[in-house]
Amino acid sequence: MAVPKLALDRPFTYLLDEEQGAGTGSLVAVPFHGRTVNGWVLGRGTEMPAGKLLRVRSVRSPVRFFDAAMLSLLRWVSHRYIAALATVIERSHPPRVAGEEDATSAPVAGPVTVPSLRAVAEPVEPFLLEPGVSTWQRPLPGEEGASCTAAVRACLELGRGAIVLVPEADPVPWTASAVLEEFADRSVAFLGGEPRTRYRTWLEILAGRYDVVVTTRPGVFAPVPNLGLIWVSREVHPGHREDRAPYYHVGEVAVARARIHRAACVLSSFAPSVDTVAQIHDGSVRESRPDRTTERANAPLVETTPPEGEDRSARLGALLKSVRSAALIVSRRGYGVARVCRTCGEPAACAACRGPIVVRRGIPRCGVCAASGRCANCGSEAFGVERGGTERVAEWAARVSGVPVRLSADAGPPAAPGPGTVLVGTASAVKDVGPVRLDLVAILDPDRALRRAGVHAAEQALATWMEAAAWSGPRSGGGRVLVQTRRAGHPAIQALVRWDPLPYLRSEAIRRTEAGFAPGHGVYRISGSSNLPDLLRAAGAVTVLSTTAERGTLCLVAVPPERLEGFRREVLRLAADGSVDRVEAEPQL
Ligand SMILES: [Zn+2]
Ligand SMILES: [Zn+2]
Image (cartoon, rainbow, N blue to C red; front, side):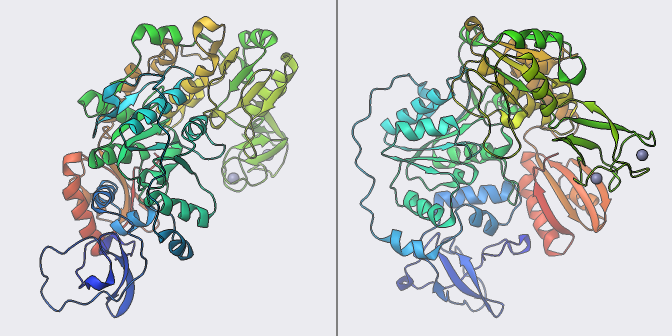
């Protein structure tokens, strides 16, 4: 049933006439409890149910939206993230634009004939393309795009197709542009766009017109025929996580798809996720990185200094006077934070919600509810402000540095790092811009970023710092990285200094295990009836944290992989009897 409800998440059996021309992956209309609803054909029924069989009323589309192998993947996603299969199928292709189906379902001339490939410039480790195998690959700074292009070329030489997944579409990441340019005659950019174009592109991919698809999140399901490689660029980037049902993570789905479709998967990043580190440790993901000597020689030169007020330091000031290019990365936006009310002397808090008041473009506003900044105690709009953040740093840097300063704004086209520019921005300004060489990359307040709550905060911070640090080029090239920290011995800071993320991420894996959320466990936020914690424990959850919310109980649970199957069955049963009303997989904690 094409109905996104867990309670209806099971196959139903209907009679389908052969003349109707439908099969696995077809969208059909069927009678259901006196109504006509859409349904997906999952395949032949294996046993005859009791009672009278109803007929499929009509076939809604000539398109086959999935084949048996893709259905295995969609089922895997539905199981792993406890989502209705109908929801997963719906999200695996762009919304239908029926008019496009007639145009594209005309016979296709088959894949375009392509001139013979150039010789492989950079050798690719042969095991990187081994069917069914997933690898975490650590590129050398500035070489991610080149490694990706080389792997795609090697894959095409084997006569198979490739998917390159990037975390964002706007601006187009450099890795994506590099692949599209290199394989111009056989690749397609499947990156957002308006619905009609998007659906047409998907139909063309299904028809086999391209063997390289460069895409974002939903493209992990792109129906590339004879798939040989899935490349995931910047695997820790938050853009790889789907933030609506089925809440999947692209890296995880890519690894599963590689296994099911006998393709290779490469997770590429300077610093992997803690989950990937755990998989490297248990042998399910392989590790590929340059030897330690090469890695050290190409690593950036990193020094630390204690921070002073307003996210700066004497050392930073001295460096800024002499550099011709720099990137300054701060964790806060704006100009500062209101600390105290100038009128009544109380600590500053939002009158509407008591949240913190931050100053952006000269205007104090609540950082939580965005109401204009008024004191919760007396309503005054005058505050004593502790200065710091991107705007304040940009203002100061413009006075100190002899080169133009550009502030990477929340909206509008992002500023790019490059010669003759001092770029100031937050983690969101750290984009895949291809090889650059900056005189200075400064991480201004890593201690604040490390204090941030959230299971994934630290791994994402480290990955971002490494990407920014790589902009300074190898230590022999004259560029340097300055880290303003009071915790120079912190393992995350040491990971940056030594250019080796694994020891820190392994310790994070242990910390998560001790907290009851071991890497590899399924984590779900489930709401429902007041006895939900006991029901979920009985269903196989090992960790259950619960709070009472307005409407019922909210539970955060962890489930070991070997119990997931039984746990899901039980949750579906609880959904059917009304004890569970919502499931969110892998919530942003
Ligand atoms: Zn507020
Ligand atoms: Zn006041």
